Amino acid sequence: MASPLRASHDSPSLLTPSDGLRIVLDALPAGVAWLRDLRIQYCNAALADMLGHAAQDLVGLTSRAWHADDAQWVEVERRCAAALKAGQVFSTVLTLQRQDGSALRCHARVQAQHAGRPEAGTVWLLTDAGLAADPADALQRQVQLLQEQVAQYAESASRAWRQADIDELTNLPNRTLLARAATQAIAQAHAGTKPLAVLYLDLDRFKYVNDSLGHRIGDQLLAALATRLRSAVRERDLVARLGGDEFMLVLPDTDVHGAAHVADKLMARTAPVYDIAQRELSISSSIGIAMYPQDGEDFDTLTQRADAAVHQAKRSGGSAYRFFTPAMQSEAARALAMENALRRALERQQFALVFQPMVDLRSGHVTGVEALLRWRHPELGNVSPAEFIPLAEACGLIDTLGEWALRNAAFQLKAWRDRGLPGLTMAVNLSAMQLQQTQLPALIDDVLREAGLAPSDLELELTEGAAMQDPQHAIAVLQALHERGLRVSIDDFGTGHSSLSYLKRFRAYKLKIDQSFVRDISVDADDRAIVAAVIHMASSLGLQTIAEGVETEAQLRFLRQQGCDEAQGYLFSRPLSAAQLEAFVRDLQQP
Image (cartoon, helix red, strand yellow):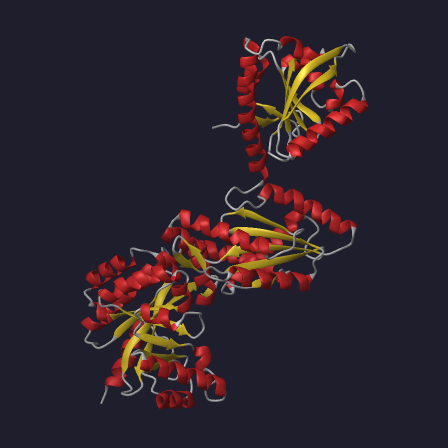
């Protein structure tokens, strides 16, 4: 329903009732006026007649216009303000002054548009005391009706003013209020030659929450996050919601060190699990920071550069903050070009799978392969997965890419089987977004049926972080996969934040030891202790282990000594094309 409140075209600061309400008010024999900051925003025809003015002459004047002198005006406004600030309606009999100087005795009833905040606006109802002798006459009944309409209007007007500046979901300032307040803060920083920081906060993979759990859960998460953001900064700092899962903070009198401290605090404050609708949800954020005056001297420029910085944080994997640097402008241009190219890469057949062997450390045989996605662009060259995977997630393309990789990997395994290359399993990576899709088990059923494979032929890899974004949902999906006979391995184990209790409930059968631990096991005692602990823990839980990134004989010897089941890495083979992988396996099979 349209609000009865609208801005005057002649003066945007003046607010007037809609045409429909104006007709009702002008037909009443009682005077009605809307005031803000003691200045008349609107008055109906009856009030203008009572005071002997033309209505348009009163609009814009202060309420002093209807008082006989300053002393009376000050005293009435003092009493009125006291009552309204206490949340009461101010009701009294006043003697006002008409334009010709004659006195007008009237009943006055004044109500704040927002309870307890008369500065936001007041509604005045004035009736000629000489016409109200009989409380039962028609006028009194009309006045009662008018009072009800005024109360409804006050509520609508208050809501309209609030909606213009406040985000309804989070109760934070919206983009409109942010622009005004930030511009004012920048002007104050300029006048006082003080620094100012603009922080652009964007949630990582929030789209997964909306897509898998629905917008109602997503909205509750945003509201809870807003409360945490507000609690992490000073009272004078501005926290606003730009829209969606994007927020902006303006921090007056804050230098680079202060901005970094606040960014760390924001990330720490927002990281703990959220209890939403009986679910435990985890969400991380990326933050871009632009500094006044070195990065820009106006709000638009600072916003653009904070935006470039947050995109850099996301490209680095998220859950991080970055300060703007001039180099980011060219990087932002490359990212835009890459995003446009990514949207057409599948239809232009620019993606391909390569396969890295997984070797049994007891027998030395290749027992399976991991399918890895590669993008070869004619102009951008070979684009690193570390660059295009986060971009695909941010663009909402990761589901399409993931399904393409799953289907092609399955059909390639079937092709090898048909060519007499038995005994291999195919490991395929699942993204966090794919895991959030409730239809994932059905999709895998379809792929296996179309390719003619058994569930045991496929191994699904997911990272700790992907599983822990919504552990309860992950448990449900992984249980469904387990019941179908599919095996799940936890990738990059030790780099995330899962617990042993969740590890058991995820129904994993294998842990992949991250290459960051494997790299230095021959020279670093801490890494040796970590790897040994993971292998022994997995063995005690009945889980297999595979180490990735194995490049030296010393690493291999240590892994064998500790009882690691499998390994993959350049010591055995780099990722190979389908034809190269087939030749590699056949060579190993030669007596």
